[in-house]
Image 1 (cartoon, one colour):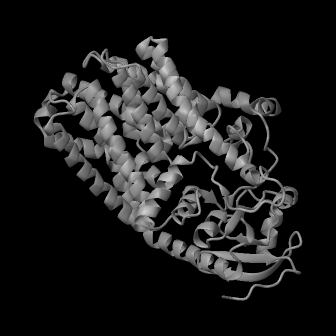
Image 2: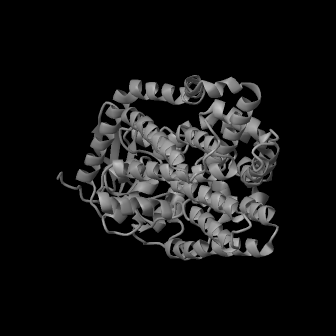
Image 3: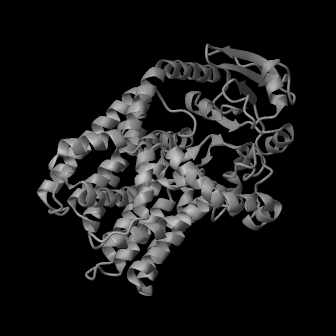
Length: 535
């Protein structure tokens, strides 16, 4: 493949279009065997998006007890969405309005954003290296297992990755002599939009500010970058204040929200209102442990959970390689180090290796990997360039083998997953029959209940003590204990006893039972509450 022909050449865009069609075919095959319906984490974003599509605004009826503690006693859901930034659910909500409330709509949004990110990566790769490096980087990105999987399970990641890549592209273009300083302002705006998509966007500020200075050595351009970054942050702060009375996310809540050392934290009100300093004082050993072991653990977990061992190996090698050709490759590799190090430090010490914090850098990693691959071919196996069929076969073997195995596993497990999903739909119908639209349910299966049952659902608290505090803010009309999550360590044994022994708990008595091959549930109400007739 020739390096000649920049991003503007017809041949380059024709090759990119052919690559996009190939990627779309791969995604379609993957979706055919993987997707049976949405469940678990995606519901956090789909519930407000669905409400927006219905014309109710970007509001949610899905809450954690820790979120309930934000509000005064006696408030009533729905409330404004505040699980991450509002931009991701808003994009899906707009698509719902335009295309209808179908399950394929969020996937359409996610993969469209991934397609757009590939185009941005192609432009960046063409500027850094050339056509062959750009197309190889896009092929690596569009076929990456962690990207394909994230489009199903982390629906805010596709727009997040898109805006992070846009910020990197504009920064790179802005270093040119002809570029005006306001280019850096546009790059800051793109980073700000990323921060309106995921809370983790704030961990990208240090690297991008450092990168803006390193590329330009011009404080005026850095000032433009900061001004562009501030604009979306002002809007996000007003939104957060309207949603929960806070101008910024609580740092203490953020630290504790992703710490593995606090089981049941999502179901507790205990940790709300802590500042980062208070959290540090309260849990010094935990922070010391993370500071000492976090970096190695994070490296291991990122490589392991990314699902792309060969790609990650090439990325690591590329970041340790010194590039001489093309001339800008070494500069770009250094920029990737600058952008990645602060995020990695945060990831290692605070979130302890959560892979999705590094996912937004996947396009940049893929480009550095592409530069390394072509450097290796040019210097060691140049004969591969005259045998494109062999090169494609090697690419497929190394970088598509994990996805092929995943498709095979999804094909084998699809009947079981479909059966479970049908039973969850039946549970939703059970909830709709026995719980009114204006009633509040506390349940271990809050995401399933709100999505399939279309009712307000609050996560069950970890303990009875937490339940008493939470119920003062938002009294329940019913409790729903299910076999989906009641066995989790997030919940006290007393809840499991109430479920398995069908006995009263906290003044609530069993009144209805649901049973299917894969799901069992027990509905409890206060004895004085009227039993709802079957609809």
